[in-house]
Amino acid sequence: MIRLFFTAALVSLACIANPAAAKELKSIGVTVGSLGNPFFVAIVRGVESQAKLLNPHVKVTALSADYDLNKQFNQIDSFISARVDMIVINAADPKAIEPAVRRAQKAGIVVIAVDVSAAGADATVQTDNVKAGAMACQHIVDKLQGKGNVIIENGPQVSAVIDRVNGCKSVLSKQPGIKVLSDDQDGKGSRDGGLSVMQGLLVRFPKIDGVFATNDPQAIGSDLAARQFKRTGIVITSVDGAPDIEVALKNKNSLISASASQNPWAMARQAVELGAGIVGGKRPEQPVLLIPPTLVTRDDVATYRGWATPQ
Image (cartoon, rainbow, N blue to C red; front, top):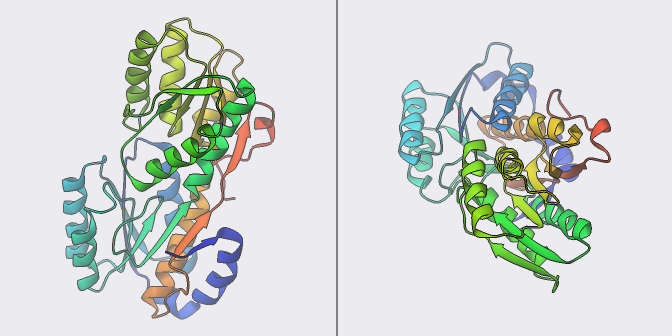
């Protein structure tokens, strides 16, 4: 698999997108993990914004799969029946989704994977999730000065989560003073899931110094659990850079210390550009685009641009 960073991607995409491709793009179907997660809401809004720049009359239909593979299968079949030109998909299962991807392509529909991979997709746009996990866990190491008990709070086993955990482990494994107490508990990618998992871990382990949650909603839930248990001194980090994490980083009572921020607007923009190019008959030279994350911390959150506007 060939990977290309965002800066280089801009150059290649300038050659991909053209007016002819834009005029042919009339309808887009979007299916994402959960529209209860502001990250996916931002992706949908980014898709709508960029698509309308290419064609003001384009129709965008966005659906929440709720991490349910069968539900996502049905949504893709609905898009096929509606004869959309492009499907932007955040796969509930990166491998098992392939039959649905193939059905769409057989019907002449371009499929672009966003945030996580989807087997068989025409192109993929995602954050460099390995780097995001490494950045977030390096922050924990730095704060703990290389010594302490750390939790890796896992999540739904999509490629983005797996990559984040692998990136985190690559950092922690180099620290002999760091002990990983747990790495297999699934926070379900949600605030409630993070709260529930963290409550169990706090009961199980009397001393926890650091927690890496695989996304911001889980981090918010974990922070709430720790404060409910009146546990202090825990360094919590995550991945996303969501609006809620901005609030947490500005809250002196929160234990959340940093988040490796994604750029959902950039993902959405590149997904639409790539898809428009393919619809117009021009396939990209590089099918996988990686957008580098940036670490936002308590120290620099005041200058963080966030997800509210295109970046």
